[in-house]
Length: 164
View 1: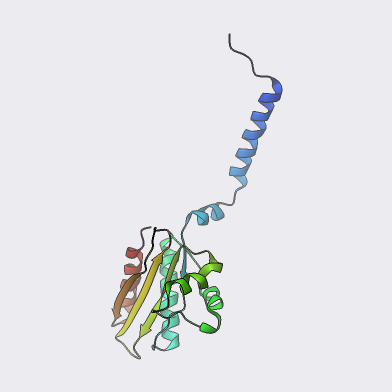
View 2: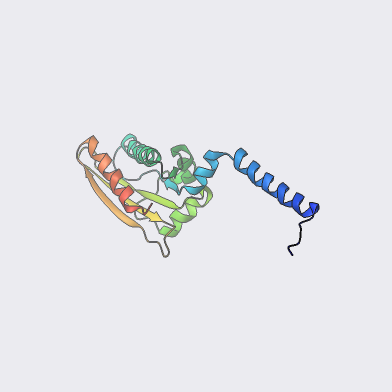
């Protein structure tokens, strides 16, 4: 013969179910969505290209990754703040230095590099480090930018280097 559940036990189950439903109803969907997205930190780019070009390339990378929707991208001014007096992170910077510099933004993907060339064609060289991978090593992406529309191909190469 089955035992019946007493009112105190049933009340506890009901209260627990109501709290769980309230959490789902009142949860911030944007925060929940962003929590699941990998956070990408794109450092200010180094190199001998004019500063406005390097800033534009960095902005384009951030904008495309943000539009893609699969990533939460740390904004440019925040990245400029964390580099401080260094202004940019060079392509040949030690990985530990890059990780240490990015520690305050809790990013899981780090991108740094350089833009070289006073005029077109320019060369964009980036390291992409995905810290979600065990024993992560930076991938090197090199793209020639012969015209301004070529920048999108460089961004596509960055997206292809990321597992998702």
